Each structure stands twice: as C-alpha cells, then as structure tokens.
Length: 232
Ligand SMILES: N[C@@H](CCC(=O)N[C@@H](CS)C(=O)NCC(=O)O)C(=O)O
Image (cartoon, rainbow, N blue to C red; front, side, top):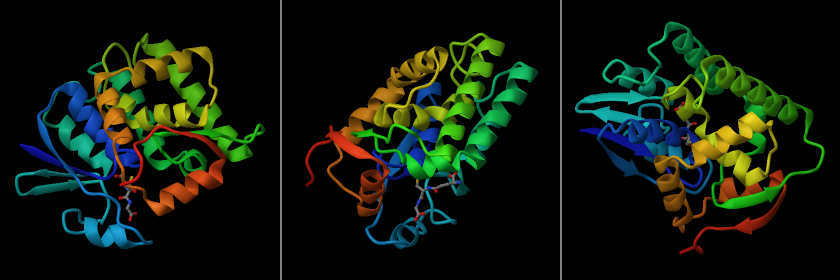
C-alpha cells in the first residue's frame, strides 16, 4: 500500500494536495504524519529520513520514493483513473492550472500561509501582489467552471486540479478573502468534501504549534479567532 508522508494538517498546504486526491478518489494509502521541527531548517533534517529533498509530501510505493506534489500526482495518474479528466481539452487545461498553482501565486502563499484553525482580518486594502494573485485565481476558476460546466474546475469529477487549489479554499476561509460568486460557491463545495472535512477536523485537533508558521500568521493580519484545541 502507498505510504504518504505529510506534516501538520493545520499548516501543510503541499501535504494536503496528494492526501486529498488519494482520499477523494478512494485510493488506499497509509498516512505518515511527521510534525514540523522547531527552528529554521530543522524540518529539513527530520524529513530527509524519508524524503530526498527534505520536504513533504513524499509518497512511498514499496521501494519506490516519489517526492514533490506534482510528481506524486503524475505518478498516481499513471496508475489510477480520474486523476486528470479524460477529455483532452479539460485535461490540458487542468494540467496548466495545476502547474500554475505549483509554480506561482507566491504572494498568496507567503502572505496568507495556510493555517486552517485561525481566522484573520487582513488590512482593508490588500497589497498589490496579493490582490493580483486573488484576482487571477478568481479568473482561472471562473474560466474552468464555465468552460467545463462544473461543479469542479475541470468538469463533473473532482481531480488533481481541484486538489491543487484545495489549500486556497482553506486560505479563503481563514483570511475572509472575497472572490466572485461562482468562485465562492466553488470554495463552499470544496470545503464540504468529505476529505476536506476530515482534514479540517484533524487540523483543529492538533495541539502542536510551529513557531515559524504562528509568527507568519500574526504578521499577516489581526488574528481574531483560534478554533484549535489548546496547546499540549
Ligand atoms: N514543491 C514542493 C513543495 C514542498 C514544501 O515546500 N513542503 C513544505 C511543507 S508544506 C516543507 O516540507 N517544508 C519543510 C522545510 O522547508 O523545511 C511540493 O510541491 O511538494
């Protein structure tokens, strides 16, 4: 059976992507959760025990080791149906959109780190780069939903492109970001997925706190709610 190495569910946006894809497609896997280590660079040393680049997620399939979320998705696509849509137009679009997420949206990733259990007020006027990222996501989602008819980004079925944007749904919830009506309806659909609900419930039960992620959250805006269980 596949073993998927991930980090804290509250923080690890890259881990969420393959975890959600495996969960929603009903592909059996064993989760190996290793919490972030305190201190800059310390996680790298810990994660190196199972991941060549010292990062999560990392998939083990017997002796075979596959690291990086996009490579994991492609590895799964070679073995399972419905990772990418079967329609060639939808498949090409889904791959482009997932690649754009994988390589881009730096402002959103840096200024609105995933922190599932927190609720944060951002300043009224979003920094320009963050505003541009949010607008592009709104545009991209609108395009996918219209062109392929929804309810998911590349058509009727949930797939890798939705998994790639799933952490954005948590960010929208945490930071109260506002997108157009179609995108907000899509966010509600993604948050309601059984896999997302399981991930979220587990994230709220985590009593670990990672200093670096917590500081980032404090710097991004005003934290007005913390729904997580208290620290251990
Ligand atoms: N491009 C990588 C990014 C992976 C990544 O940055 N993972 C973070 C956790 S969400 C990590 O392992 N950080 C540990 C560190 O940098 O020390 C992917 O797509 O998997």
